[in-house]
Image (cartoon, rainbow, N blue to C red):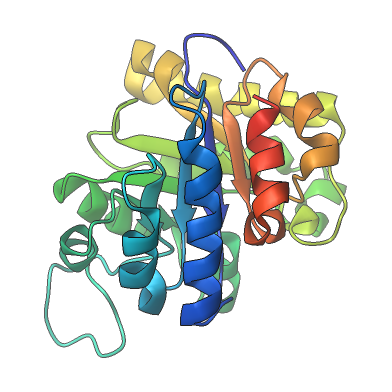
Length: 252
């Protein structure tokens, strides 16, 4: 993490929480965040679609940004069960996660689809959090750097800048397992991602934030966030507990 890129601590709540749970969690985070008038990091929470309204109200003017976990590439139309980027913008979201490994695996999303979703996010004035990462089989086969750089090329939206795009590296085999790559392995991948970005967007790559996602928690966050090309975290399970999520942020 460098002083030129402001850290982003993002919480992906996944499919967790009912209204009472989500409101209480958001209110707890807002109370803690409001106690620090000038934190050296940005915070983001991405609740399930049905909780976005309640969480928005609970966050108030805490400074914690609100995001969503996915969107459809189309602006509107006959897409039953889907939500457009325009709808999310209307619901006060400023970030949208696209291409999470669970979407790629469970729903078969391709780089092309992820790119189209990210471009919809950008066209509606929000920031896209584009997820990339390799499976355990791909890592064991020595294909990690080939996979992630290919995903960068295929998933990065046209018009990506440091102001509207964040990349999140999430080794699929580390998500929710308690396993994490070594610090050297994480830095190697993040450096390769930034180098690939430089080929596409030139000097703009220096300002694009790269998050690490994969079992980040208070006990390992300081080590990971100290890496030169790690600019924050995309947090899963630990984002569902106020003390754990704020503890990770404190490591910035």
